[in-house]
Amino acid sequence: MTTFVALLTSLPTGNSTIRMRVWRALKNTGCGVLRDGVYVLPVDSPQASALVEAESLVRGAGGFAMTVELNTKTAAQLEHIRKLFDRGEEYGALVKRIGAASTALQRLGKRKSDTLVQRLRRSFEELGEIDFYPGQAQLQAKAAMSALEREAQLFSEGEPHTARRKVRRFDPAKYRNRTWATRKDLWVDRLASIWLIKRFIDKNAKFVWIDRPRDRPKRAIGFDFDGAEFTHVANRITFEVLLTSFGFDKDPALMTLGDTVHFLDVGGIPVADAKGLETILRGIKGKTQSDDALALEAMKVFDLFYSAYVQKNAE
Image 1 (cartoon, rainbow, N blue to C red):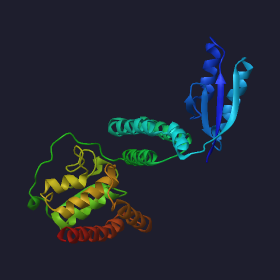
Image 2 (image 1 turned 120 degrees about the vertical axis):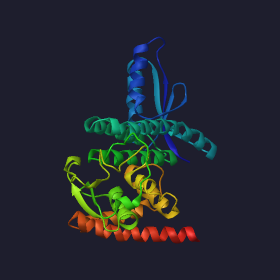
Image 3 (image 1 turned 135 degrees about the horizontal axis):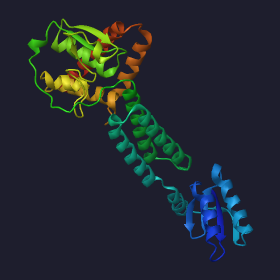
């Protein structure tokens, strides 16, 4: 049914050196071990030639080696051999490493974070090279890797570190007709926060975009940067902190929007609408020439998403 290439070996007794050399030759091929001394690879895999090289190595050391084609005759035989190439445990271990890296990003500097992410990307790609029958495990690892790379990019672009404090309640009446400051080059969390402030907290709000936290105007309310009055706290992004701080965390539509923004900003549990929102915002960002124009157009998008969530929750 399907053709494999198999290496049959019998190594010289007591020759630990040749055993180590053969092991090293086969280590990175991803071959399956059918039984002791029988190594198998799909015949069309790039690594199949390594079995022929190992055959020459064994023969040269006085051992027995033969490379043959292995053809399965039944579905059961095929399934048995394919299980030899199951990478589920390896992907599972990689996903755990990715999760640990995600937790560590905020306490690492940019250089160390970049090195860590690159190392994990390389591990993922190397595993993919020997994943001859990719399935759900690879998809899950790919999603985790993409989320980590997105997080690392955000942190490298000045994404605020998580503040170690509790989220307090504030009186919206004390935050009206104010100037609000956040980092320039707006993206999803800041855009959503601007919309929330303008629509629900301070309808007459004015906004300024700053390069660095110390550039915040003296009386302006800062959000979404280190040291800002409203920023990331624990596992909450700035938009979610604003929701809780001003008592809007009982609105199901706003909370649903918060889940979408959270996933786009720092990753986590996938949200169905996230990709659509990201695509629209990227389109606006590419078309507009300033943060003022970007914020204005994004307001319309968040209006529509919020309206849709309100209608959906009313059904």
